[in-house]
Amino acid sequence: MCVCDLVEILHTTQPNISQHLKKLKARGLVNETRRSQWIYYSLNMKDKPHLLGILDQLSSMTEQIQAARPQSCN
View 1 (cartoon, helix red, strand yellow):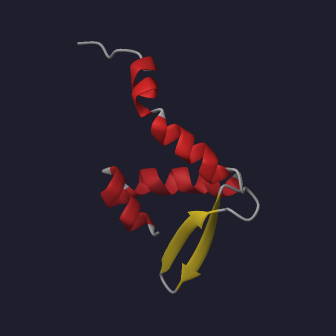
View 2 (cartoon, one colour; view 1 turned 60 degrees about the horizontal axis):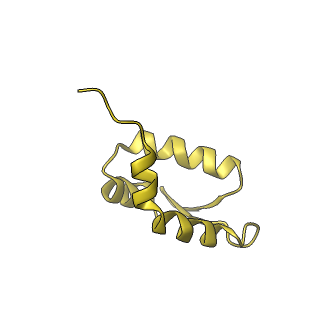
């Protein structure tokens, strides 16, 4: 998946996505593959096989995570 795909999915800016991916790559959570001018990212399942299980748990906990967030000021 390239940054442009993530920008569209997550509705945020390209620099924001790039900074997050840089940090995830530094921690070994994502792999980077360059194809000409494009960079594609994928989960590092080889070195971090538990990663997919963690992501599955997070997606099932969406309501709990949102409820735990502090309420914003009005």
